[in-house]
Length: 291
Ligand SMILES: Cc1ncc(COP(=O)(O)O)c(C=O)c1O
Image (cartoon, rainbow, N blue to C red; front, side, top):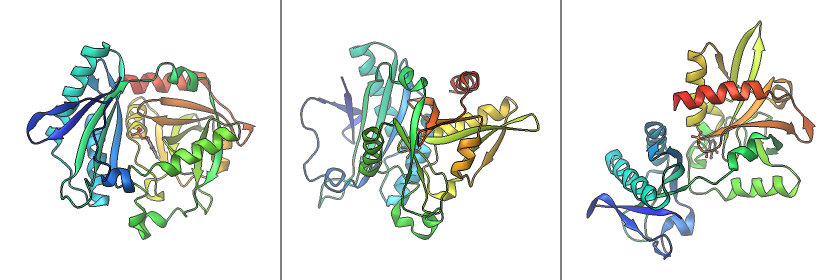
């Protein structure tokens, strides 16, 4: 059951639409060219998590694509409408809330914007908590291309996710669960739908590491929230460049994202790596408390 709420100037709180019947024009550039942006966020018992961080990132994605973004309050009201309606239909619990914006119908000069809220998939987090077998896959760009070639939109959350989905299918067809992309110059980047975080100990100091944003990755809102919470709890934080050897030698590696939170990686390219249920629990608790 998905609740759709379109952003519509005639409806200040958003216009609820039936998800079971067609709602988009077939000439919408989001559908014909993947020309648009989105956000996926978690809501718990009707309350969105990290909404400000998601709206901030949507603003930078819109800037990168030169898209006109409706005002924040309009998104906030549409999200509230969608979550209230979802609660009526499905009761409380965890929900996935997507914010979507396309360049609009071909020839028209107005973006299409809507919110889609649905119950979080049951058991998905428990399944990934058991550990992920991950493949390292070459994304084919070097780690400095993002700045040189902004038209690649590497740090934006665009609707063109077919490549990311193809990478996940490739992993599944080859007996793995997920993917960590590497750059053509051998740096660790991100997962198709997640950020990469690893834990190390240096002279007794616990430290979290993640690839540097300049390498053309999406700035993860979960990674950021986790780093802030961990730092407040005495962890040190650091940023790449990271190479596959760092993953193999870390105390633990996770793929993190808004819906799945921390998913521990247990093998890379078929080689088991160190993992730590205790660290996963500690950091998940820190993250939950921060959210
Ligand atoms: C490519 C990519 N990197 C990282 C993330 C993690 O972002 P967040 O923690 O904000 O969900 C996502 C989330 O979908 C993603 O698609």
